[in-house]
Length: 88
Image (tube, rainbow, N blue to C red):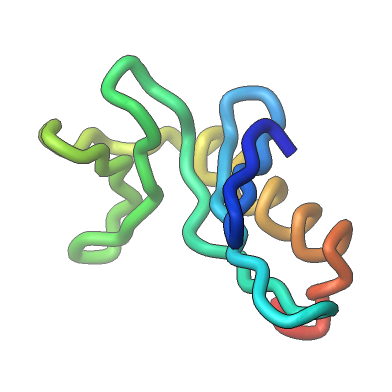
């Protein structure tokens, strides 16, 4: 965990990051994962079947295959670490 607020935590590994919402004890919900860029957190979105990194206030850029894989693996590992893998 790299940052924490009342009901949210931000988790990161390398350049990957994700927000997690914590609710009642034992409940957590992982939000979209993305990559930290000079424009902030760029989320992985799919447009017309193509992976795009979209950051607030910036035009989306094409996501490289290694970026897509890094985000996918980070999200999967985070869900396992938070014991949410059954919801993956």
